[in-house]
Amino acid sequence: MEWVNYPGLESSQYFERAQKYLPNGKGGLLTFGVKGGYEAGKKLIDSLELFSLVANIGDAKSLVIHPASTTHQQLSAAEQADTGVTPGMVRLSVGIEDIRDILADLDQAIAAANGHSITGATAGTCHAAQ
Image (cartoon, rainbow, N blue to C red):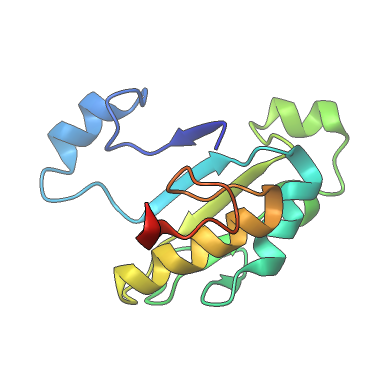
């Protein structure tokens, strides 16, 4: 990951508002930048098995989109940047599936996209042996 945007993180510009207006949880929507840019972002969403590739958010099932190659593909790189879309940006709307399944799916997709996992290990590393 290059960056994560989630209102529950202290680094978020919306953290204080989220603390005030969302006291019981910060929601299931987040964006992040995958290392490797545009191609890694596409590879990540193509590698996900549990998440559905759709543009909407707020479903009971987990959803994903890579805006640079889908919803914003008609824009130039400069226009995408003006709207806040970066080449490796991925948006997740997390559903109600078991969190272990969600994390496992993200982990294998990130490893497929750039050789690293969300646990920080290099792809192919056995976490149980560490």
